[in-house]
Length: 230
Image 1 (cartoon, rainbow, N blue to C red):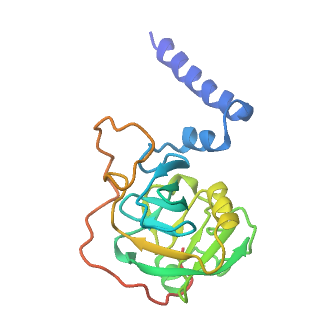
Image 2 (spheres, helix red, strand yellow):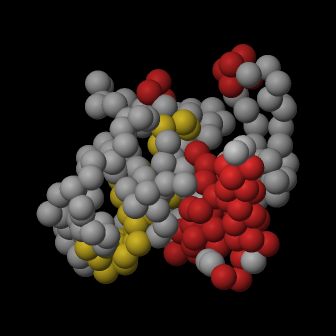
């Protein structure tokens, strides 16, 4: 009587292994979503969406409320990407710009980070598979806040960062190639995907997104100079 559920578990495990062993049957993004989960709101892949036409092509809008990054491609249209957003104590918003870009950036945790987690290394070289900044980074203004990749794709869609904007490595690589130094970046808690100004490009079946990691903003924290954050 116990063999039937065991056979079911074995079949499920074999199904996962078959997907991993045959990535040619699914896109890289689809495989990431299969393994790490995430729905169309928080963790879905890149989408082309309609957007408020007041924003100009080339502008980047980071919506912590939507947990999406929008890149305006033409008036009324944007590319939308899932992101990880700041944790409660690291919230901020403001208007800034891309001040520099780096390929395979190195990472140095702040003293505060090392106090929180003494096991953190003092430095991680660029290109290392466990580098929290991933394969690309776009620096925001004079701060050390960045739009960057990640070594932990399962965190995309969650409120876990120290102030930076995390993306899937394949997504930040695309942003890196599309967004030049000097591009305007608006970081806000305003929501767009649930309003008439931005259509998410996927059907709205009335199901509310999970709010496990989201709480209303209690105070606006202005953009400020920070140490190495991620």
